[in-house]
Length: 394
Image (cartoon, rainbow, N blue to C red; front, side, top):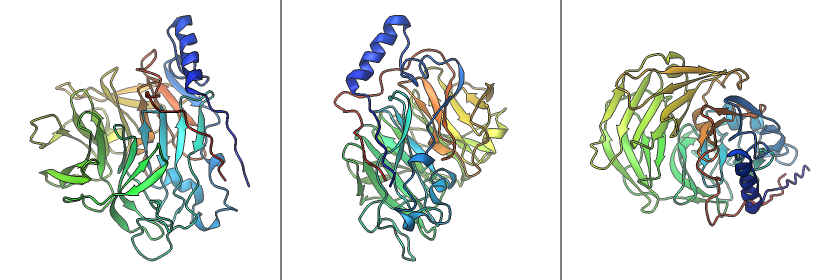
């Protein structure tokens, strides 16, 4: 049995360190909170001791969830992530099919000193075994799955939204909807009304805090989802577009942008929109567009879409420019080659730290990338939220 006990920073400690760093030079939050992210030099920073593998469930205690790959499938098998802006952490959730049946959730905690990778919960001890489309485990939790770009963080309710995916143990495609409540650490299977997106892989998904809705494009139609109403609404029907695209929200213009499979598409989500799909002709980003589900995020400070498909280089795109050109930005010491099945939203932007972070593999440390100097927009801990509690994991 492996017990891990971590020293967690109290919220007051976070604010104290921030106050000290601001006093000595306008810098905050780090790998020791004061110097790794907000005050880091421009470029890549390896976040040491942040591998997922050391905090994976002990195979001896959970032999029935290992599948044919074990914990490696959490990142290797078409798995995405969400950025929890309330607590300044990148959430990683994946597995599924016959690769791995563990449904536990992982977090890269940017507000800890030093920055850590933790497992938030233990996997279900009753994983699916039947030859069926297994939406849930034997104890009523969401089953593990290839998550693709089907998951987002809904900040206004502090939940992770999940649509479909490839279920264990035989890879059937799901069309279920779940939410995970981070405050209570509980799953809830939703029963949405309205027409649901098609059950398949390759759905691009974003969340708009302004609209308090999730938006999904399933190659043929654009949908919105309201968690308050537990309802899907069909917004527009489109000609088929390619799969293997990653969605990102340009929050300044309320534009849903999808990148990958040789194309860039966009939907105007602002009030009064007809939700018709735009196809953007871009140049200079062939390595991004031709990669399967690149990592894509929006940087509100530089007002750029930023994409990563492995190595030391990211590509930036000005969404407001009439001549849309991807600009390569390269710094040494990056995360190495990306996994072949896609990065999705495991590459994400932290508003609190003004940095990008990427979790590439369970056996690799996470990396941070600074493109602009200085601190972010806050501490990453919203008022009324407590710091994460210690959890004995096995």
